[in-house]
Image 1 (cartoon, rainbow, N blue to C red):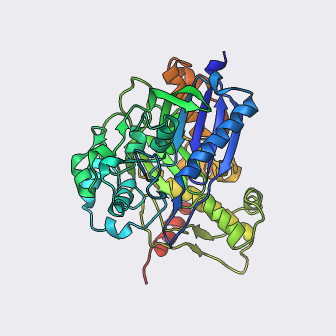
Image 2: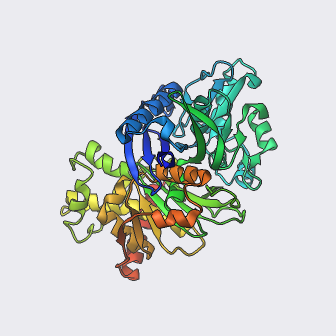
Image 3: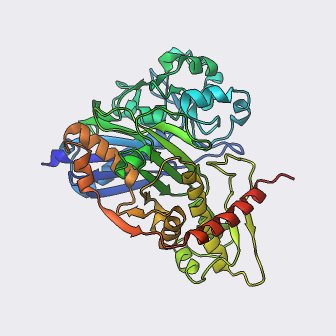
Length: 482
């Protein structure tokens, strides 16, 4: 019976989480370790790949001990990970040749300006940006004296699988590969023209395998355990939410907010301002795509109010303060604290608070910040051409009832919050469990899903349009130069 338990590894930007998940998709145990971020120069962000690996071992051991389960009792392992973060290592020694360059890193911004953006957009569904892996990989290779045939490249999933299999498996899946800027999104194969553009030799790259399927045996604390699921964190969250059909949408409200909509099986050009990416699918299912929007400052706006302005003591205080006033009284907060992401993609934009009067209080400012988060998500979803039946939400800020209700009001559709906050890890566990036969199909997964609070739209459309008009007026001012 215990063999019907999954270890889900969720390796994120700020830390690593491991869950022990049973066949009812219940979390039996959880462990977490922070990892350090290094900032060697302005705009540079790095991780130590060996520290990442160590954090996986520590959290796995702690979670298994808390669940009173031995590695030999596991049915399999599912992995989800921070995407785009780039690691290159020596195939012979297994040692990284350079620190991991994190997705947030901006060191290759100048290089991106010299690359044909139309080619990248057409082949990969992505916008040309140092966010993605290709220019990071190129940067490392230019500074490495070893031949590419002696090296291996991967995103964090590939690195962890290499370590778990002692170098026997060098693989990735389409969800992670689609974030490298090297994948032909239509064929889901490495693109030769893009490889030549970035000076990458094919032998450097991992093999692309399905996100749900037994790809080999990992070795965990001396015990062989099947590796059965891989997906980038946002696609794993989409899968964990049960967004299996065209038009299903989810938003993860963390430091930023990532919005994904299942876009079905047809390969089409992405809507302006959004990305198209590979979605995670069940074993034997046709390839699916997702439209994605990245909001750069969601919870970060509330953190700034707490740490920068010190007008709140804790993020949880924001809901109570927002509800103390009937409206923002005309205050609009555009939280472009690190530029603007989707759908504007304006790295030079700066944050703006406008509409302040002598009567403005901290409650008005906090409410305006929460509304600014929801308005950014609404901007992303307004770009999606299809109709939405609803939005599924997770992440720390999804626990804020004011924010979720305002989001439902803006979108005009229900917002349903996940009962469990670890949707990325549960998505990885679901992919692994399907491959191992714990569940026969995605219908069985849906039957085990647990939903939390549900918010129905209550604001009039006239009021919604008024709020959006004020927001877009402020947004234009945010993007003005000079």
